[in-house]
Image 1: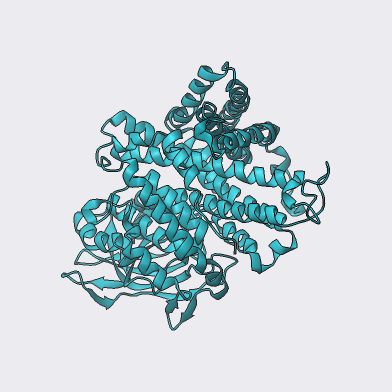
Image 2: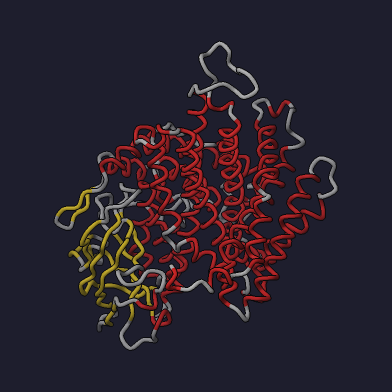
Length: 596
């Protein structure tokens, strides 16, 4: 398994130079989150990732989880690593101080999550699920429920899960059969089976707090009749100690392609005692708090895997001797040149790098908007931030996870045959990355969400939070002597996105299949343009510094060079995406079912 070193220099760049992270410290509640506090946090997270979590990644994959008599044991070393993780306060760094959290901004937590995902994606699933459950209870639970569950979820003593999928229904939750029968004491009896439940059972925490979607008898049909319940593995006594085992048990664990050290469980609820979160029949509203957080988290997983693959591929390309440069030997003192001299290897490495750094910048922009959404004192600023997060969440989830899988595949290609065998760790990254394109809403579902829900919402109001800043940036800088060529390329791709948006809005109203047929290409086009916007802004920051004393390590020069590759070799894909959208869905929808 290649060694992992957190890209702290680039993280500091996007947080403070690109997105002016000091502005977050000016928000109420974040006054102490200055750069002097944040940078040591990132440095400690980097040490934890490289020294504690990454060494367990390959062994955890090889061993996997063990299931026996309803008990799940995580791989060797995971429990000790979790104790280190918990004792360091990492389970609560972005949680409310009222419940024992450290209250760090989401924009900082995103970078920490990226490090965890790069080092050990399976391990990161356990605290990640807990944080998502925490957010749902924090946003929608009663004060009593929050007082009972949140402190021990924040400090990592208890874990959390989300239970949506059933054997007969995945995305279509309206088909759900799990039922919740009201009891005289205000609780409910939950009965049903859920599958694909990450962290559903394990040995890392004393208790596991399940969030379960279920239907109350005689409620509305479909998703309008779904409610959300908190169902603890062990019931909690009045004094906060653990009581009897609840009727929630793991029936099996899945044997998966990847993330093998993450326990993915079949959960059986047999009249388990649960308590309502939010209102009856309004469970989707509460669950979407967790799901949206999870989609943003999965996007970061894709980015994290991509970074790990890139680092491994760069190291190998510099060391592996193979052939001579087409233009003549670059290392004549050696029997062959290293792989990195060859054009196609450089193409793959720069594709990886441009995608990763663009995604990190875009993810940081959205996570900073989340900080303004929750903490800004200005109502309009909160609404604007919420709109930006809403329109970009499906883009991030799908685009970043596609990048993660594609980058891991490129890593295998660079390693050649050595990438296909276990020893070097690249094949594990491919297997681990693959699930990110599926769970928390498959990427095709993200595309439908973008086109069918987010794009038309509030008469296009969400789109304006992205379109307006891009338009303003182009107008302000397209004639700049140095920055102008980058911005002009951005303008061309942005024009294609605008054209595609108008086309889908026009044809989609009367022909829903046309919008559906265009949806994935539209999401990928959106992701390309959003990344181009980030790259143009990064060039704006880097240009005055490249080649100066401040650029002693060549960071800013490399940033501009990577941007040139992105605009020259990757952004032209936007034209192909627009062509596919304008071609319409006739060729796919009129194809006879029987001919498949």
